[in-house]
Length: 208
Image (cartoon, rainbow, N blue to C red; front, side, top):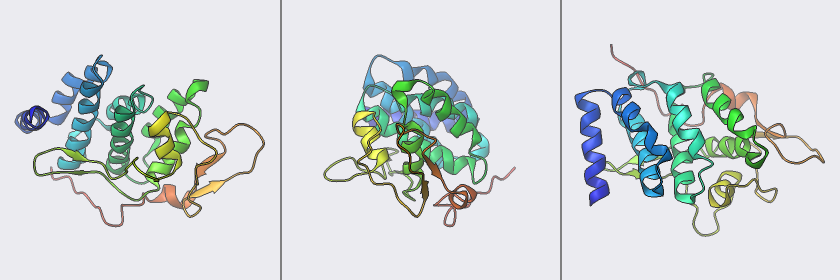
């Protein structure tokens, strides 16, 4: 109940002012000591992206919020961040993912986060976006329960890259190497970079 009330209040503030203003004020909460606050902050960004025109946002700045949360110590926050990244990619559009991928690259420069790029690419290949309920809450498109597998799911569960996770051959080009796994070994194909998986069904026009 409290979470729902907070979300509805923030969404009303975005309508009264602008998403950029509200997100700018609450962006520091991604570093809050409470994981619930960190998760809600990321979810609010996702909800805003799914309910407002893309021209209402500073999308590169949103990459700076969502991507660091991918390596949060809490699984729930990583899950929220992975769904947010999918929404950010949708807003950026085909051929314009550089701000997102650059942000992922910067985080992955730390050896302990090696494999993050592969996880992000796996999430984008799922051809699914999160949704927003009538009450304003975000419903994740990817589940991490049960026997669901994937590079992205493994990352959400443990924050680590797993060689045992299957990679979708239709969306990825896998290079054989004896070296340790990294973003250089699993990359999105040229075809998948040309058009995001869901874009054939999602077109957004920003009215000036």
